[in-house]
Length: 239
Image 1 (spheres, rainbow, N blue to C red):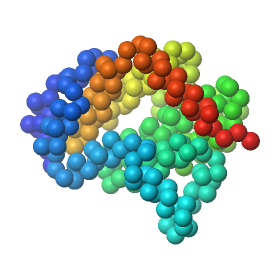
Image 2 (image 1 turned 60 degrees about the horizontal axis):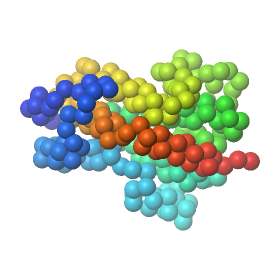
Image 3 (image 1 turned 90 degrees about the vertical axis):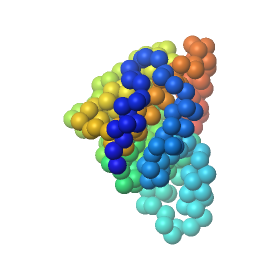
Image 4 (image 1 turned 120 degrees about the horizontal axis):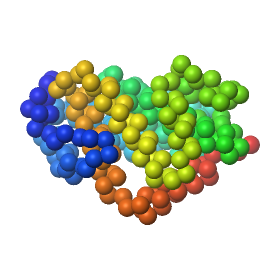
């Protein structure tokens, strides 16, 4: 299904620019325009890691071995509760029938894993306890190879940019740079796609980033991201 009229009428987005409209207004517009099938894709992108579906899946896996994925026991033993929820969320996204959605979840999983591994190595934590998922990048990171790039050269795009984020001491600026990488990735993946649901989903994700930053003051941003980092450190299970 094409969305020529919808996309043609939306304001242009620019990385680091102003948010064109509130997310409430954008969601209302999409709810009126998108097909039921495409709205389901949007809902998947918006799903938080503490969504009822995530919690129900975890409870199901804990209660029975029937339908339990092969990675569950290792993940349950190694990951914090927050990271475990994220792994289940990634797995749901990676099973989507839409290729763009699968690639978006895979991209974010790999980027967050590389950042977490780099932080762990710098602070002396066990890298293996912070890696989420079963992608090729995740499996290489768990080996904690001695190379500075963890042996990921040629395996992951944007590797040097993601690893360099650790050197940004201002946590708000670090998160902004992460979003800049995401923003550019979305532009690249939809460059040769016109008026499709992929364009709509990319627009939503980019608008969400711009709106999030518009709502954060410097003080609020520092507080939010220090809490995130502190939570991550506390969540890592040490031997």
